[in-house]
Amino acid sequence: MSEQNTSENNSFFKKAERYVRENQRSLIIIGGVALTLVLGFFAYLKFYKGPKEVEAQDAMWKAQYYFEIDSFNLAINGTIDPKTGESYAGFLQIADEYSGTQAGNLANYYLGICYLNLGQYQAAIDALEQVDLSDQIIQPMAIGALGDAYMELGDIENAISNYESAAKASSNQFTSPLYLKKAALALEETGDYKKALDHYEKILKDYEGSDEGRDIEKYIARAKGRAGITE
Image (tube, rainbow, N blue to C red; front, side, top):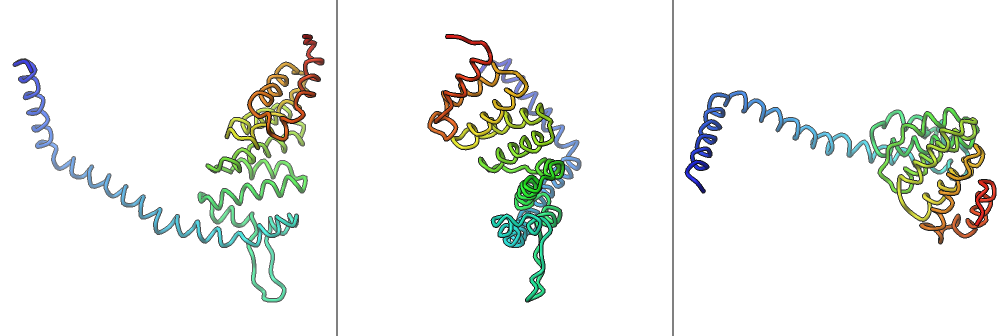
């Protein structure tokens, strides 16, 4: 190391030492605040959010049962056992009381699907827009369900946008080809056969073994015909 570099380094360390000495009180306060925030965050996870997650999951089982047997109104609003008088929360209450938890997010997903099945499409959109999950299947399905709700309302552009987002949200053999095909079918309704063709061909290229991929060639042929593409 040259004498010049050594001199510059020594000067830097002296300035740093002087800064720390002159601002010691402020730095201690800043460090204390940072430590408090970190400890507070971990305390929140351990003593509040963790128990809330467990509590929400325990509260949801009855609503999930009604969802599975297609009793969507009971799944949404909850019920009271006529024999015991015990009340069971529905997804609407769970999503509200446990917002910010993963279980609360899941409740919003179920809630949206319930409303979708009941034909209450705007309510479905309102619920599904609250879903924020890291799950590689449920999150794309929530976005795709948004597409379904917009499609039912006749908002094809928003339907296509959500279908395409759902297809990209997680690359897998189930949700990706499903929503690529839904997007392509909706694009055909708008007359955009070339973009629909792109989606169909992506299914053939990347997801040929999926349910959608097995008969995708006939959709490709149809889109080419409608787009005026000849080979």
